[in-house]
Image (cartoon, rainbow, N blue to C red; front, side):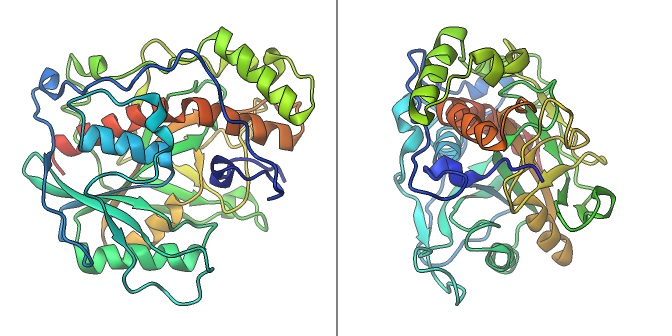
Amino acid sequence: MQQGHNPKLRFGLSLDKAARPAVRASIRNAPDLPAVSYQLVGQTAPTLLTTPAVKLPKASAIVITWAEAEWAALEHVFCSGSTPMPYSDRNRGTWPDWQEDSSELRAGGPSGWTSWGSYRLVQVGAEPVLLYKSNTHLDWPGAPFLEALIERFVNEVQPKLILSIGTAGGAKPADRIGTVRAVSAGTLFDASKPPGQWPAYSNTWKAKDTVLNHARFSRLLLPVPSNVSDLEALCEQFNTQYKTAYTLEQLDPKNLNLGDPSPLIEDQTGGAASLLTTSTFVVGTTAGTYSEFVAIEMDDAVIGEACRKSGTAFAFVRNISDPVQNAALPATVQGNWGSAIYDAYGFYTSYNGAIAAWAMLAAGI
């Protein structure tokens, strides 16, 4: 089985969980996230609402995300988009006026798991929306805990829609870094069964694309600022840390880590397209592994399963933060290079994903 896309790499752990730090990217071309001109597409900025402590508030929709770079982009687009956000904020661990959600923790979790996550309430158009940064994952502390979090959302927040957004690994060689794909279905990887028997969870919720299709929407997006010079520097840092001698052409076949001048935002909600959720480290490769899926990540199918039980609508908006990897390279190298690219550019790919999620909500749930 191929190893691959695991969020733990993004928190500095290696594939075997040894005490080997992930590459900390050093790139020169690191612009701020731009101020968001909501009015370009006939909209207004989200309104910040008073967020109660202790008890989760009612909301029409929940937007849940995971890692720190994703959280920074979510904060920027939904809470503080009137001013630019510096690249250095991509690793921030706290944001003003977010509340910690540590009530009624499920018993049996690991000692390091001390809260479900953090949350903040905003209004998008006429609807209250609960933003949620989750500390609760499929791989840690485990599926029962993630399922319990979604059950709390359903019972306490009573949303019409749960929208999971964030970074993901590529599944198709054609998808460059920064591609954003939205779907209403997730398939759960199961190494003990052939792909045709993997469980899939879907629903019929379809986003309204009036804002996404606005003639000026592309002006809100930020092309991922990767360039050959910075990728060469990142390759050198990678080889120094891991004592290897790979060329950029080996680590980045077909220039997949160069972002498109116009980022691709593709809404496939309401259809049959599915992403792949894994509880182990799985990577898409240039050999076309898992190319029937739109992306590879580590939470969403479990969310879909829990939502389907309650009849709550759900969708997933995932940005490609680390494209498919060179199938000729060892699995560990594939994973470590994907981690380095994520660390350098996940802040930017997450911004475009957050903008796409905001546009869907602004059009109406």
